[in-house]
Figure 1 (cartoon, rainbow, N blue to C red):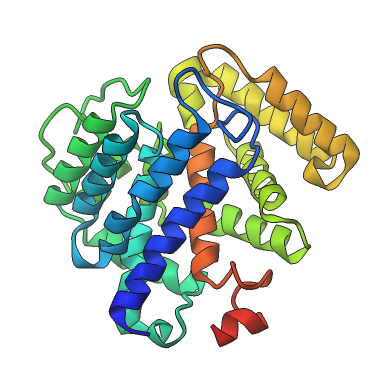
Figure 2 (tube, one colour):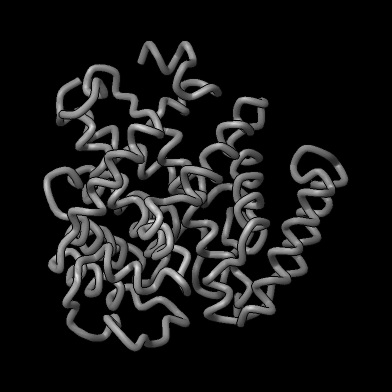
Length: 310
């Protein structure tokens, strides 16, 4: 597979991951039937389409520049912050996927296995620079996410003096996306990806598999987006609710589906303070990883007949 074709696959996987994540009826998030004030499902569709070129070119530029380009493209189409967290996660993953062309046999098959991708990601994160941090800070200011606040060191409103990875480590105790950078995407690769693969292997369609993955991640740790906007007690209550839904069977039983609906109604409020946005972002990252592993063509991912013959 030529480099240009694989870059197109990376762009398509990024766009499709965002489309699938936005379409799944995850409690507390925008979906086909749920809108937040002036933010609609259509905004998320536009955002998914907009980031394709930036993510497809991630192998040719630094992580920070890719993040900035993707956020600028999103703003041109939506005028609001719909995908900052997703872009922050997908940009290094996309660059890592691109590097696999020269370090593995991925160029021939178009498939990158998760463990191979994670090793490449570790190299990408270690290599980030102050320029990457500068570009990312500019992107975050442009996206203007709610509830960001300020920090004592390397604040978004200042000029960074450390690499992007180091800046993220400083924020890892209070931000789930930053924690992913600090841990080589531990939650994505060790929790969300296995959950999604297991759900697909068990025959769940994409919507149900994504909802189950999202609930699995949310049930394990509090969502830092909720913490920033509503406080730790509220975030903890949403996590407990996710645990209760899974205990009731989640998307795999009638009782569980009723619990999903009840949770969606219970955590909704006019200001959307209990929106588990960081969990949704990690879910999108997991979808991207699974798609790169041939997950669109096979429920089994790597090792499945379709994935192997792609």
